[in-house]
Image 1 (cartoon, rainbow over the protein chains, first blue to last red):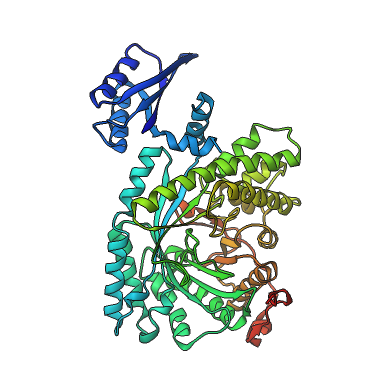
Image 2 (image 1 turned 45 degrees about the horizontal axis):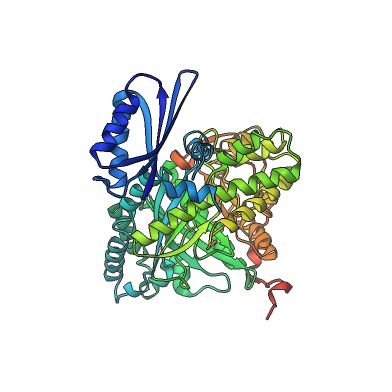
Length: 89
Length: 451
């Protein structure tokens, strides 16, 4: 089962470290990662494997949301099916 | 592999353009709950709703988190209640109150199906049931009611239209301290559909399965945004853009419907491909029409733009979903649409123009506030006009008007939340009393004879 983690917010040191630490703690594997900074705005996409996740997807989303609030960025995790449904025929 | 552009397009749709699934509605058959008394029937209905829909809110909230698509409303629709109360005419409200309790217990914001289908004729128990509607709506919070008074196959039951003119007015009176709010929960239909997930007109038809999940999508903001990005497109390109956008929106709805029905152990009913507005800025059907090129909704050209929009939404949506149903089209509720409110407030959008618009979009004269002293027969005539459009064009039409007690043209009425606010709109002054008083049935149109 795959999920997409997106992080959007103001750039500062330690964002990737904090997000990947939380994912690692919950046995979520990062398969692909891309990141850009556009006029000071940090945007990151992570393609993850959540089949062995310690938390159900909804709870993982809550944990990431709380982390985002703590470090001042917006973090979402979404099942990949929503993107496949909307963008692939 | 998904591209970055696709991922951020979806995220922007949710974050900036108000993409959401408007409703996950569970349809429940209550036929097996009929007992020998009103109280026993009501108790059986309560138990069944609470057991079938127990997890609807929890499941919808999980799906919302997992897929990142907001699910705004969770609702329940039930078998038309007039069929359940046939044996205890006069005590119908006992059931209405218990349905309200059930809605509160399972945590849904509305429960639809306090309904009667009288398009071809009215039994004595149905007449008694319809008479109970004002009290039922005045003494419950979440119960919604609808009455079908016509169809392309049966014609129009003018007696029922006349009765509903009076019932709408009585409902407004009974809920006078909330500006006639009861009428926001009452719809009069022609060609009502059995699988509509949207309120206030949802009910679970007798031709439906025992437990069904129907989903209503939305997304006027997403369509508006897509058009904004293409300011110089010609009109055929506009139709294409709407089609493609509707496809994406509907696919999201299809995914939610499939998962919700699986998790709730219910049959996947339909996806309703409707563009349903909300009163917030950026979520308006009127603004789509204005983006196509109208200075203000309601002006000449509005009907043509709406026809294009409605058709393109269907074309995109039909390909995106395996089961399409419900009302499927663009909604034009005045009080629930920021742009419609503005159009009506400045006088560009009139009741007559709205009537024309209903000939080419999915529903009817919806959430329109009219003067509180509008005669019963005028409301009945508005209902008959709408029903005629539906009957002749083989489509669903409906009337949900609120004759606001003590208010007149130019006054404003606030319903709050998703039901919004509305200026009181003018109705025609000349009487239709004699026409309505004639009673009887308007015969079915010639094209109903297809057998």
